[in-house]
Image 1 (cartoon, rainbow, N blue to C red):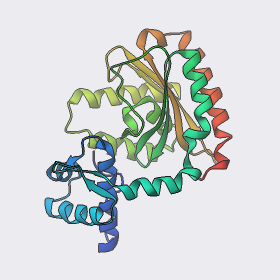
Image 2 (cartoon, rainbow, N blue to C red):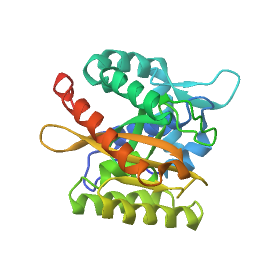
Image 3 (tube, rainbow, N blue to C red):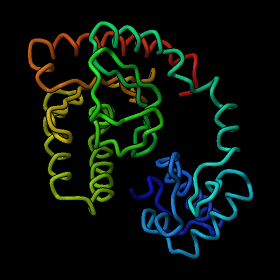
Length: 265
């Protein structure tokens, strides 16, 4: 996954270093359980080994990154957690939306997700499970993915201006270029379908027999800042149930939008 904040031509050395350090932090956040080897960080970010070594050393010194005990792997550090705690009261949409997600999961028996936009990516900040467990669906709280790789991400994407959509789509497809061609074809297929219907619609495009739909959550100016999505067995998202679930998602998303004024999105 390449950076969502590419180094800009003419940027100062300090700005470039800052952007690259943030790029490393974003990447470190994608494997917090196992951590990253330095060489893998270099491959993933496209930065040279020396640059990663230098920046990672600074992040470790400042406690934004840490070495996993007994290994040569690195992950987010204690200061990253402390900063998150300080920001939480102003960005914890998951806390305000928890009742809505719990209602949806209980009534639909499916898995419900709350995602926020992070540049060209989406981050899952809440997951509520109904009775129908989907063991093949491994998106957990904290999972960061390109917007084009999920119904929730695409729900955000299709609400953006077309020029911005094109930029994000090209960047996302480039970020998965080293994966199999089938993955890129699945992305394009889901995007075409979702643009046609106006919301995120994944019909087993990535995981066999598992489908998902998502709707955007917008700020007062109409900008999509988050999404509410639901995953289920593909057979359980056939019409007319899909239409009923879509109406429920939109109803709860509208209620969540009314809470955004309490936060700093």
